[in-house]
View 1: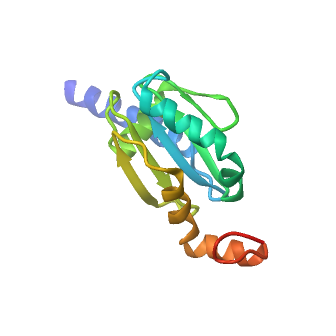
View 2 (view 1 turned 90 degrees about the vertical axis):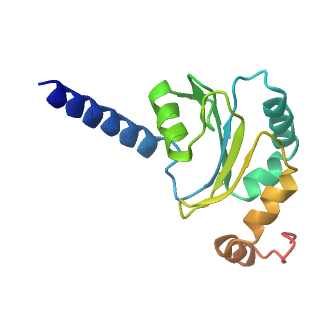
Length: 151
């Protein structure tokens, strides 16, 4: 009986996590930057958030959406809320503990392209990584841009 209850609970949790991830950040039309932070007052989070705001045109040009994830909640790119179950699913998927700061870039193909922990890198590092991706190179050609992303 106890084993049956365990498997039922495990199955239910697994289903919740799969559903949550399918709803959050599972878009192939965008590249996704996940920012995991212990809280909104974290210095690293604050630094990165300011950089993203100052480079907003570059972010938009690269079809990049940003999810801000905290231990119990999150903020999606359209200022909507992300539930604790959805945050848990993403933390499990990317192996990020609730108290850790981590940044993860996921390409339009759904694969992780870059990750860094407990530091903030210049956004140009992210932009260079994106600009080197084959899909991005094609987008740049289609938009009449050169290799440096300029028209």
